[in-house]
Every structure is written in structure tokens, then in C-alpha cells.
Length: 261
Ligand SMILES: Nc1ncnc2c1ncn2[C@@H]1O[C@H](COP(=O)(O)OP(=O)(O)O)[C@@H](O)[C@H]1O
Ligand SMILES: [Mg+2]
Image 1 (spheres, rainbow, N blue to C red):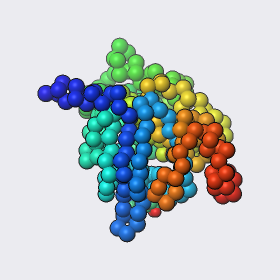
Image 2: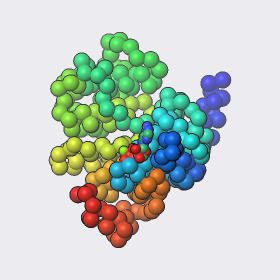
Image 3: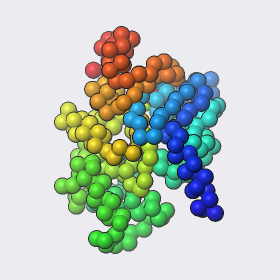
């Protein structure tokens, strides 16, 4: 039976990674999202820009299932996931970055990523002693390489710098078999050097992994994306390539005239 449901899920492989049809989210009288129609191709890298309160994080919450939309449908690789709980979406390869939980503070960087790999692949968390031949350990090592944390592998998570913790958050999202990752302001609080590192890490991710990135820093957002969606007042008002967005008079007014530096 598990195989049947897997086969039916894979039928959607040729479809878009993400399709949103007329998605809305209200909080009481407040319209946080309305009329959201979005198509994100498999493997695509999309930036979502917009001022504070535009609805960007609410959009992510609707996609991950943390807050269900009040209207509309959401499909993930062809499958309607609108009403699925968050863990069922994770199981299908949808990820978002979360602040690192306290749970990991007493662990080394390598072991925390190892546990995340093991948890996703075996659907349980246990503190069994890892062996070097363990496929999860090999995946954990390659993930650490991908996020530029090779040298920190044996360091305790609690002692990482802020920037390194953000890199570890990306590592945890890469555990298992992600197909689409949602990054909510990954450059927040990073130094210029750490931002450059983040751009290199995102651009170096395996091509089959798509992502959507919410990012205030235009320099970061336009350098790590292929398409950009601009949000305001719960709506998407413009989409284009990074070039088109950068040269758009309306966007220039918002970003150069506003508080976004
Ligand atoms: N859980 C919530 N309860 C009530 N209002 C919310 C909640 N989450 C977000 N909002 C409101 O929805 C709007 C969009 O918020 P958000 O999606 O966080 O914007 P952004 O991430 O673009 O800054 C804001 O007006 C915000 O106050
Ligand atoms: Mg937000």
C-alpha cells in the first residue's frame, strides 16, 4: 500500500514543484493573503520580495501547513496538499528553515545533521552510535561540505557563531531528500562576508533542489534567484527575472526610496 501511494505521488513529478490557486489567508478581519496565484517549476529558484507585513511569511505558512489558507488550493509536484498536516508535507520533500532548536545544543555539528538525516530516512530520532559506513553519516558529511561547515564538524552546536548557526539551519533543511526548500530571510543578522558565503552556498546547492527565498537584501535575493515575485498588501503585484526586477522603476522607488538598503 505504501508503494501504491508513492507511485501515485510520483505521477506528479512532471508537474510544477508548487502551484497556488487563488490562495487567501485571513486573520479575523485582516486580509494577510489574497488572490495568490503562483507557479514554481521543479528545481526553480524563486525570490519573494516585499515590505514588512506584505504577507511573505504567511505565504510560507500556507505552503508548509503551519497555518492553513482560508481559501484556495496548493499543489506540490501535482499533488493537492492544501489540507495535509506539516509532517506529511515534509515527508513529500518540502522543507523550511527553522531556528535551531535547543535540542541540538549539546550535540556536535556533524551529529546534529546526522540525526536529522536519520530522522527523515527512518522516521524516528534515536541516539544510536553512528558508524562510519552509515549512509546517513555520509549524507551528513556531504551536507556539511555543501554549507561550508566542514571545519566545524566536531564543534558543539551551542558554540557556533550566529552566521554558522544559520548555515546549520540550511544543513538541517537539506537532510533527507528535499525537493523544495523555503528560506525565510536567511541573511538576517549576517555580516557582509557571511552574506557572500550564503550566496555561494545557495548557488552551489544541487540543481534538482528548488527553493523559495524571502529576502530583504536585494543584493542577496537577486543573485540567488531565477525569478522574483513582488508582494504588497497580501498580493503579488509583479513577477520577473532579477534583471527585470532590478530595473523596474516601481521596485527602485520601493527599495531605493525606502528603508531597505
Ligand atoms: N498569526 C497571526 N495572527 C494575526 N495576524 C497575523 C498573523 N501572522 C501574520 N499576521 C498579519 O498578517 C500580515 C502579513 O504578515 P507576514 O506574513 O508576517 O508579513 P511579512 O512576512 O511579509 O512581513 C501582517 O499584517 C501580520 O500582522
Ligand atoms: Mg516575514
